[in-house]
Length: 159
Image 1 (cartoon, helix red, strand yellow):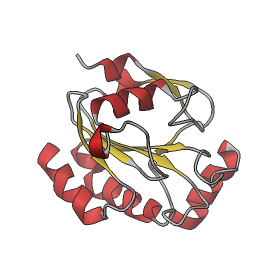
Image 2: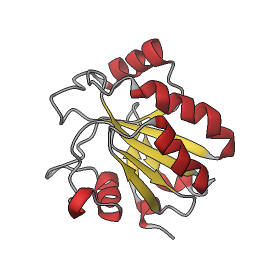
Image 3: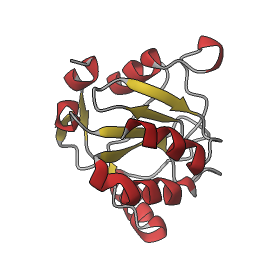
């Protein structure tokens, strides 16, 4: 069993969520921000979620304020922004750190499983995405610049 399923996170209402709840699901885990040049990717993420949720895809959005302070809002403000501007129906979680001494255990695990370019583990910017298969293994790490089509091409291989 994957170590991923031993990790707990908080949803955006601060309720504990065990990652084991997602066993058998394909996960697209993303660090998100509301005031970023990549913020329109919420639309792409929602599109993928709607298209593949009936085939066991879950998109999990983790707000992060570490890059240019581009996610300053509260959990409630973030959810309202996503609902109003992008009709987001996938799950959003509590704001986290993805780098540094307070890195979320989930993102420590993801970065360890799928390092970036030249083996670096650090996340470079908002909207870095990790595709996790039904066995809890990281299949691919996507940069913020990877398009919906690139992500979808890899995603369908995991269905």
